[in-house]
Image (cartoon, helix red, strand yellow):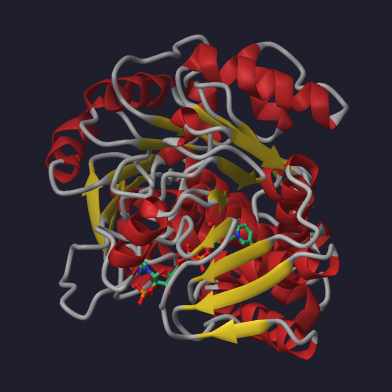
Length: 479
Ligand SMILES: NC(=O)c1ccc[n+]([C@@H]2O[C@H](COP(=O)([O-])OP(=O)(O)OC[C@H]3O[C@@H](n4cnc5c(N)ncnc54)[C@H](OP(=O)(O)O)[C@@H]3O)[C@@H](O)[C@H]2O)c1
């Protein structure tokens, strides 16, 4: 069962994998005509195809063409001009075939009605003239076939809708179709569109900005990282969280790193605790900052002093917000997970995964996905297992792959950037699993943009700076 949102993700990802709207529309319309012809011989029958302005209507226009080719006496009622270029093209094709297309409702005099008025793009209660048209369809004695869903059916599977005798649902069943006679048809959406993260995930899952938006609406992140030996890693994460859209980022670092961290950027709010590495002495300041934030990222550059290990576990136990756990914090948590109620995203590479679980993730993609799912469930956190193909697994048993990125990203610090992007998305209200999926895609996409510009030799800082360009490019091409 797929929701309208999930279908939109698939549609866009399908285009990314080379199967565009036009091809899907052709397959969908043909499948509807084929199913109908198998059920009822249409030769010589009066078939009325009702088309709305969206892609559901576009599917109807294609079905009309194939039904006319099968000998039916087809006419089309086009309620509104088609919006997408694919639907416009199919209207032209239909007119060229000589099929009658009218705009005025009039009578619905037909033996078969194909309902392609409104599909999964419906929002809210059905408006006029669609409502009256649906009432008319329901009074007709014609055999009624709906394309994808009966027009009027909402994403929740409710609402006044066409009383279809048959629904030809595209790719997967939709909520509410249980009470209809439904046939699900394949329309050629590639398997990769659902298995692999794509631009559809980013466009659909990331929040859109409204004019009235104000400070804080897009989240605050707390980054806990750094030690005497490493000051750069948490800065990279913090900058990446900002570049991925979070409104504010607090950095909590040891006193020894305070000045150098603060000097790095005026955009970061830096706080400190006594000493040269994370210890329980940081807890009072951390607790105060956690009250102001929407997501904590813990780990980059922390080191593994004995009291650091204690403090990491304690911070996760007391966190009221979701936590992204990276680098040394993963090592600190060996044998201490799960930690209780907090939502977690764990971002290990294969070596950290092995330390965390005592198990190698395996060599094949299938083995790694299986291990990631099993351990995500066991550790009660989303797992983003980094690799040349990333695997993102949820405790509920979902798994997705990501193949953006390139060998230029072996540069030190790119993992800190990725963790920062995950935290930035979580702080903006994206569910942890989707945040991890989108972050993996965006981070790799930014790396691929840099590869084109500079070849393999780019730095983690450049990667962080490219995150906004990657998101912009994805929205411009696919939004
Ligand atoms: N790529 C493909 O070809 C492909 C793949 C999968 C599925 N599909 C098909 O495409 C469909 C989704 O297409 P779509 O996203 O373009 O949406 P749609 O279901 O065709 O409907 C979109 C249209 O409905 C109008 N609308 C929305 N809510 C309404 C309401 N409450 N009352 C009256 N009109 C309303 C919208 O107008 P406003 O914008 O003005 O509100 C918009 O013009 C699927 O159901 C399936 O049939 C196509």
